[in-house]
Amino acid sequence: MKARHLNYSFIPESQLILNDDGSVYHLGVTGDQVADTVLIVGDPDRVPIISKRFDSIEFKKSGREFCIHTGQVGKKRVTVLSTGIGVDNIDIVMNEIDAAVNIDPVSRKPLQQLRQLRMVRLGTCGSLRADIPIGTTIASSYAVGFDGVPWHYDMEMEQEERLLAEAFQQHADWPAELAKPYCAKADKLMLNNIGQGMVHGITMTANGFYGPQNRSLRLPLNEKGRMDRIRSFHHGTLNATNFEMECAGLYALGGLLGHRMLTCCVVLANRYNEEFTKDLSKAVDHLIDAVLERL
Image (cartoon, rainbow, N blue to C red; front, side, top):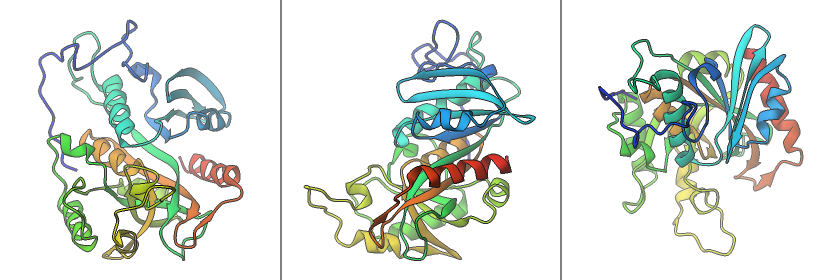
C-alpha cells in the first residue's frame, strides 16, 4: 500500500476524540503505554492468556471489545491488544493506536519523528484446501479483502497488490453488487522470520462469518459457485489458503500508516472437508508460544 498523509496544522476534536487523560477514545491508551511490538487478537479473553506468559505486566486496560496489556517478555517490551471481530473494528484499532503513538494530544499535530510499530495478529481461520489440515499455522503473504473499508481512504495499491486483486476479481467472477476486492501484503522480513516453517499463502478476509464465508444455516446463499472459484484461486506460486475476518484490513491500514504487519492464523476448520477442531485451546496455545519465541 502506498501512503498519502494529510498535513494537518491542527486535528479538530470531532476528528481526533480524546479522553480526559489524553488517551484515544475507544482504546483508552496513550503512546507511552504502547510497546513497539504489538500482538493483535480478536477475542479479549485471549489477552490474559498471552500476558500470563509475560515476565511482568506494567499496564492493563479494557473497555468494550478492546483489552490491552503491556509488559516484558525477557528484554522485549510487548503490547497485546484485542480488536473484536471484523475490519470495521480494525478501522478503529489501527487509526487509534497510530494516533496514540504518532499524534501529540496537546498540539493535535502528528509528531515530527513517527514511531513504526511491528504488529503481529495471532488468529484463527478456516482452511480452503484439503491439503491444509486442522492445526496448521498459516502466515498470510497477501490478503484479499471483501469488506470495502480501505476504499474510504485515498489509498493506492502497489503494483503487485493491484495485479493480484485484479486477477482474483476476474477469477472469482466477482459480482458488481459486492464491494470491490482489494489486496494488501505482509511485511516480508516478518513473514520470513516469524512465519518461518508456516504455510504461506493468500488469505481471504471476509466481511462476515456466515454468508460471506459460504456458511448457510436457515438463509439460502446467493453465491452461485463462488466458493469453488475462491478455493481454486492462485497467483504465481501462492494459493488461496484460508478464510478469516481481519487480515486484509490490518495489512491495508497498517501499510498506509507505515507500520509493519503480519498475520499468523491456526486452522480450526477445514472448509473443504467440513471438519472442525476438537481441541481449540491446544491449537491456539501452540500458535502463541511459537510467535512469542520468535519475537
